[in-house]
Length: 183
Image 1 (tube, helix red, strand yellow):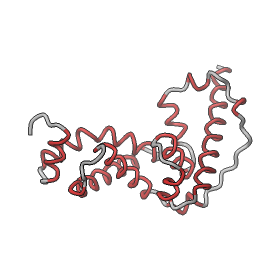
Image 2: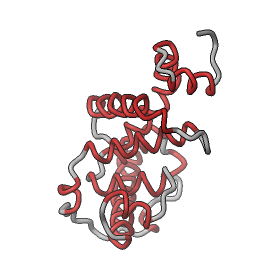
Image 3: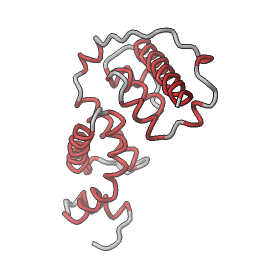
């Protein structure tokens, strides 16, 4: 199989051609690994989620109706795989105490100095429920209603988890900025 277009990869995978399957893995693993990293705490679990996701994608590609974006379809499978990878019950009972953090507590230039990797590091350290809701809402663009259905929680719980995640991130940003100022 020579240089393939997305459609050639899809068609080849639907026919279970090994070359097309390999091409799909090579072409999309990086993109899907980025999604996996957002939902996992470490590289090993991200790799496990990626492997499970790719297997699911290849097994279910025959059901892909070619309406909408192929990448979005694969991301959806990857997100669902990541969410199922972690135990829902631990997230529902998660308690995390936050001190009040106001927007005014965060210095204005904190956001501009924050790199993508540093932000991902902060998000990765959020408690599971906070991280999942934050990723689904702020990064993936799902509504609280959709998040509630995906995670088996209420819309208000989704909103609450997002608010707490934002407060915790702001607190961590403030701490990092204060450390930078001292150095």
